[in-house]
Length: 376
Image (cartoon, rainbow, N blue to C red; front, side):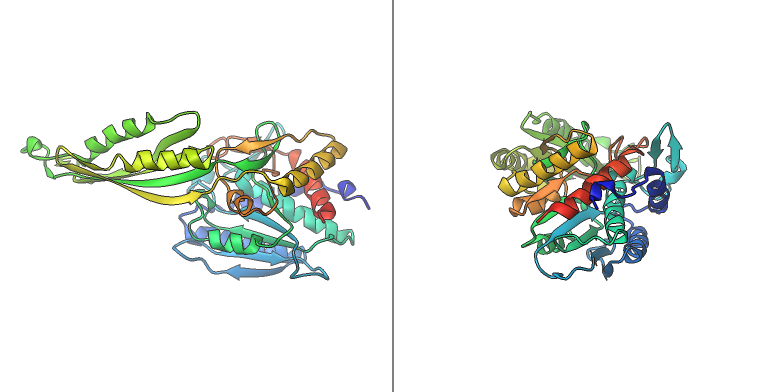
């Protein structure tokens, strides 16, 4: 049987996906992420997989490793790598409830990336129901910390990918529906300003405001942005009392670089900002980094296969390198053939308008099934 003709039904898939969306799982809530993993574990087991729950570390939730039955289990095969954490805090469902409108489905994490994860699960479910056997063994790995740079599970992902024939990453499709065959480097930095406290009413001039100093540094940092290396401050923590001159302020910076050389220059520029001025010390600490992933021959062969399958399904699958990191950075940089962003179509990821095109569920499940049945 042609895997592209398996009976995928977008509306039925959406009903199966809905409980995943209504199980909120923000990265920093380990219990919530682990509840999501337990839900996915049940669905994976029902589909026929042998599921292992890997306890969380570093304050993050659990991970899942699921192996589907295969006579060559344990040999090099296909790894499906996805994350179940989202950027949406618990309670987001009140503002962004699961709903369907004009063939769009809304909800926190539905695009990034629970929809894509569910698509891969449904592809395996239909393959097994049809009595088909994938040429290679298939393993799923779902992790809990991608949205903060994968600090706890990078090693788990790299160990799972090492020696595999292919890694499929069902992150959401690019704006034009295309796949990603390479990604820019992503670096994170933690900033700290340390000033001198004083009473903001009685002795304002005696203080040295860490908040004011950080504000000036933020403007300086974001002004360093170029086409090849960007800087964005996304988190600030400071102050408890408005009548106190702040003595400490912390912030976090995300930097994207197109090449390793661009990244090295960006890191050097950030570190050069450190020092003390007007009684306030400024410290830069480098955080987690995603390496540059440049497509090799194996990745391009995967893309050519996917492109041909997409044409048979009835759509064009473009490709390109992308900013915005994923766990594909790690596997691609290792040299393992990796095809990223083959998940659902949609818009508004990380916002209160996050949604998917419902009809893309069946479209992408057919693509996934085609890949799983044709990668050798």
